[in-house]
Length: 214
Image (cartoon, rainbow, N blue to C red; front, side, top):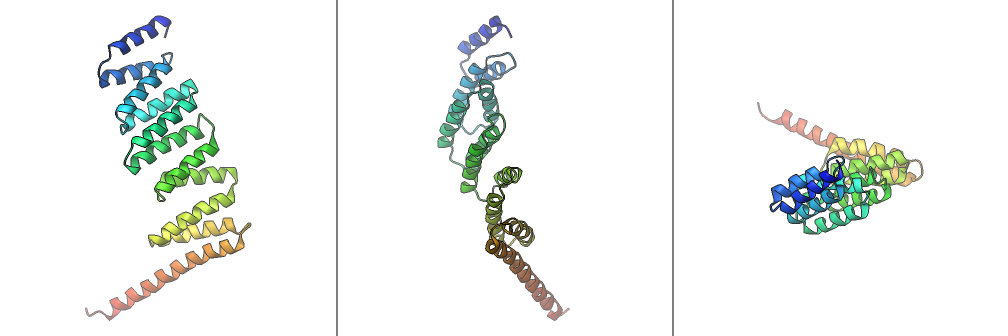
């Protein structure tokens, strides 16, 4: 898009008086060869007006990535988080931020911090758990991965999720066994205990069924 085209975009911007026109302006400015600075500023205004509109979050992030303006994007995310009430909304926006930090911004440690924020608010958030586990696994950070899996193991025990407990106890114990033998044994025992309880419950239910009159 040449200079004349960009001036045309700006003229549309001056005439845009309502939200729909602003969205059209932002989408036009975000096109290849457009005006990413205008796109970023327009999406910022739209998000400030409608922070819960998730359809705005990704294109806004793209505009800031194009500008290589990580600070501006993070500032927008943090301001938006302050205005979001629902935990699901906050964590969805955090996941968007973490994806950009791990991807184009190549800021893995900062992404880890954001994923931990998600889990602090929702310990059962599967997306954050998987993303964090993948980061630790790729980096060979076995102890941090084991600690994360141990938290998942504890949550699975609280839910009485036997299959998850069995799988997580084996994986957690295997990671801990390299350097922390006592923690490894605790993880293995957690799995064995749940399996024993499930077996006892199965025997009890079978006994009740056998004793019941036909």
